[in-house]
Length: 84
Image (cartoon, rainbow, N blue to C red; front, side, top):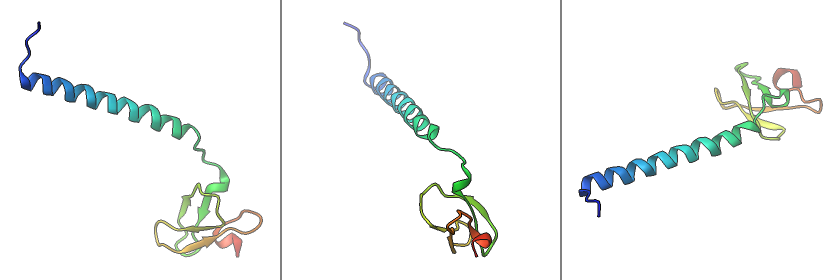
């Protein structure tokens, strides 16, 4: 039988666990990112601070991440000052 001390066994177990967790995160996160696109429908312009940002939710209202104001898209899909 192979003899291994306690600290070596713990370090091998932790290394394998962390490596498996890392690969799981990489492969599952990569699958999620494939569906993300930078479509013009998700481009928003804040009407207060003029900050351009992406919001992938299909909503007619969005909060600006910079100033926190609420922006609205009109029927044509324009956002910010263009929607007014």
